[in-house]
Every structure is written in structure tokens, then in C-alpha cells.
Amino acid sequence: MLSRGSNLEGESGELADSLQRRLAADPDRPQYHFLPKANWVNDPNGPIFWKGYYHLFYQYSSTIEPQGPKWWGHARSKDMVFWEHLPMALVPTPGGPDKDGCWSGSAFINGGLPTLIYTGVFPQVQCLATSDDGMTTWKKVSGNPVVGAPPTGLVVTGFRDPSIWREGDSWLMTVGSGFQRQGGAVLLYGSKDLARWDYLHPLCSAPPFERRDSAGSSPYEPVDAGDMWECPDFFPLGQKHVLMVSTQGRVHYLIGTYSDRKLQVETHGLIDGSGLHYAAKSFKDDRGRRILWGWVREARSAAAQNAAGWSGAISLPRVLSIEPEGALRMDPLPELARLHGHHHRDADLEVKGFIPAPQIQGSSLEIQLAMDLGDAKEGGISARRSPDAVEETTISYQAATHQLVLVTTRSSLSRDAGGGMYQGALKLKPGEPLRLTVFLDGSVVEVFANGRTCLTGRIYPTRSDSLGVGIFAKEGRARVKSLDAYEMKAISPNRFTA
Ligand code: FRU
Image 1 (tube, protein in one colour):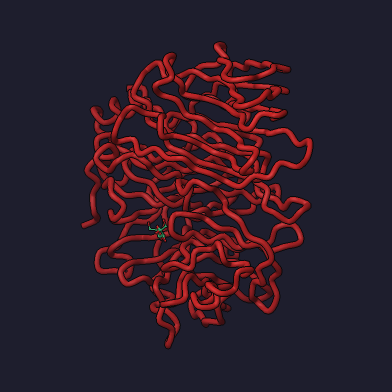
Image 2 (cartoon, rainbow, N blue to C red):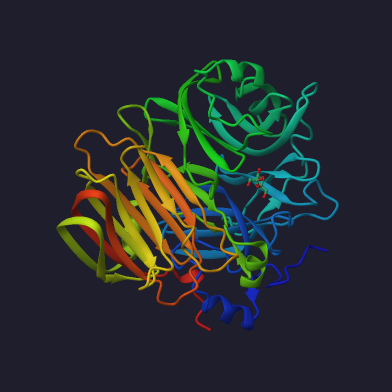
């Protein structure tokens, strides 16, 4: 028997009416982020463009708990903004190598044939599936698992999340892993036929603790050498190569030079400072852009997630590029402007203390702020603010510490909400204004600052009037060059009209 969801009636994804009504009325549920119809989502898997559609797969579970058995959900889109749900792509096969779950992986086209590579559990092994009906249904290959164990002689802490590309006449594959007492590693494999794989060497790995501790200038230093590196994603970008790894709640990017099939790391940073944007996965789109997706985790309690009937979301797509100084640049996908509804603009305002923006209200907004900090020590946006400010979320820049700060500790009066204070390094150049783009979508907040620092938060305001927006500057005067706010339209699959 396949495991059946408590909320989904089988793979077709029909929802009980009562659950549909509950989800439709839920103010925390995002309206323009991609979500499954209900239940649990974690990692984005196998994003790919094929024959006019962007396909996105994702880790799905019909139980709302991190350890639930994982399936691959599937959706497609013409523009990466509006989505259409498709049947589940992968579900565990009883008695098969993925009997306990189909974990993260990638999609690729093999001589015209859509193919998925993913991790079957337990133990962790790598498996393939193909589709001969245009990505509607998927068949697991008879030779699974194609990699049935970690390399002989290596004691690894994990062995999962394959990613694949073509180099010359070979397929190359990375597998997320780690070495005991050392830290994360990305194992590199090669194959001529996808069926027989040879282990080559680590593409990149964290140096041993001993060396890390004494080598203050190690480029890896901030990259947690914890258990293992999950979800490796490796790709060329500009003149460089980028490796993203997810570990201990954060996604790190390592930028460097790829030679002899190894990555020599030159710079590094965080994809998101909050720890709520995880398991990032990218793909090259039909226009040559490198687009990144992530899992927006919950901050609320497990009990609150269960009561809601859903957990997690897929982040908005980010376009990646390399800044002239060599850091990673991240911008929201321009097509998201298709969601823009009513627009309000303010310009040239002096700010000292807090000024409300009474024409801007809502839980589904994109707000763009360009601000000269002047002599203010801190300046930014307050959102989802109740008239008496007992609930409020702030996004600001602190000049002295060069930090972008997202504070969600007062976003909700509920004890289940799990707020935090999240920070990301952001050094503004002399004369450079603070440029914030803030996406508010029910319980999801995504912040982009000057294209180079991102913070993702989760907020669960309890009051129906926690919808206000304002601008603030502390200990000095700042100037708002421009403030643009757009009401955002809902994308169809998330809203059920009960
Ligand atoms: C990352 C991760 C992956 C794994 C998947 C299981 O969030 O732990 O390493 O494949 O989730 O759902």
C-alpha cells in the first residue's frame, strides 16, 4: 500500500471540503508563494524548463511533521509566477529502495527523455525515474538504486540529494555528504550511461576541525563543518563557479574556480541570514538566467502547524548573478511584477522617528523603499503593524553594525509564533541608499536589500487590524527617496474558493 495522506484523498490531491474551507479562511496562508494544496512541503526539487513550461518538484508529506515519509510533489508554470498542480511525481514503492521516502534530487533531460535523480531511504541510495508521457507520470528504472552505497572505505555522515550535469561525454553528479570529525563534503561521481557510477573525489569539503580552528583566514571558516552538507547545488555563474550547500539551518554559497573537477573557493557568504530559507536549489532558465528557489520554513510551533493543516512554503524565485566585487547578487524575479495590483507611491519625505503610511495597508504587499540614512543610526520599514503597535514587524538597516535586521519578536501576540531577530551583513557604499524590497504574504516575509543581502521571516499576527505600514529613522534624520507599495494578486492554486 502507498502511504495515504490524512488530508489528501490519495494522489489525485482532492481535499476534504472542511479542510478547503479552513485553508481558504487562513490569514497566515500565503497567497502568491507556491504551496501544495495542503499538508507539508520542504525542499524544492528538480526545477527545470522544458517544452514551454517551468517545472518545479518539491518534498511533500501528507503528515505535518519533519520526519513524515516524503513524496515528490509537482507543478508547472508558464512564467514561474502562476502555477498549476500536477499529479505527485514520486511516491515510495513498498519494498523498493525508496520504501521509506523519495528524498531530494534533481531533474534533467537525457537525450530528450525527462529524468529525475533522487535519494531513496533508508539506507540513503541514489535512484532514477523517467517520464515518457511529457512529465505527467514517472517510472522508476529497474536498475535502482543506481548508486547503492557511499564510496567503499569512506565513513560518511550522510549520502543524499544528487545533482547532475553533463561535461564532455560524461555525466557528473554531486552527492551531499560529510566526513566524521571533519564536516561537510560534496562527493563527485562520474558516469557514461547513468547506470554505472564511479566515485571520483570530493568536489569540495570542509577542512578538519583542527585546521579550521587554527586557520583564522580559512575561506571555509563561516561554513559550518557540522554533520554534513545537504542539497549541494553547483553551477557556473559569470566567470566563476558557485557551490551552494545547506547545513545546520543555513545555505552557504562558495564562489571560486573549478579546475581538475574540484572547486577552489575564493569567496563565500550566506544565501539568507535568517535560517528560515533552506535547502536552496537553482536551475538555468530558458533565457540563461540562474534562478534559485528555497524552502521557507515555519517558525511557529508544531502544534500550530498541525492545527493549520499545512506547513512550509516555496520561496519566491531569486535571480542570481555575480557582483563586480565578486559577491553573489540576488534579485527577485522581474516577472513577479505580474502580481502587482493597486500601486501607491510616496517620494521625498524626511523621517525622524516613526511616520505612518496610512494609504498602504495589507498582508499581501510588495514594498520598495529607497532611503538615504543621513545621520540616522537606523532606518527602515515597519509592517503588519496594529494601530496601537502591539503587533509589528520591522526591517531596518543599522549603520554602526552594517547589519540588515528583521525583527519578528513582536509580530504576534501568540506564544506559538516563535519570533526572532534575524541579521544579515550589508555594507552600504558611501552615498549608496538603502534599497529594500519587502514581500509580505500572509505569514511569509521576504526581504531583499540592495541586491546582496536577503532575510526571510515568518510572522503570525493574531489581530485582524495588524496591517499597517510605516517608515522609521532612529537617532537622526533620514530621507525617503521613494516608497512604492503594490497590492499583490493571489496565484490560483493556493486559494480555494470554498
Ligand atoms: C533538507 C533535507 C534533504 C533531504 C530532504 C528530506 O531539508 O534534509 O537533505 O533529502 O530534506 O525531505
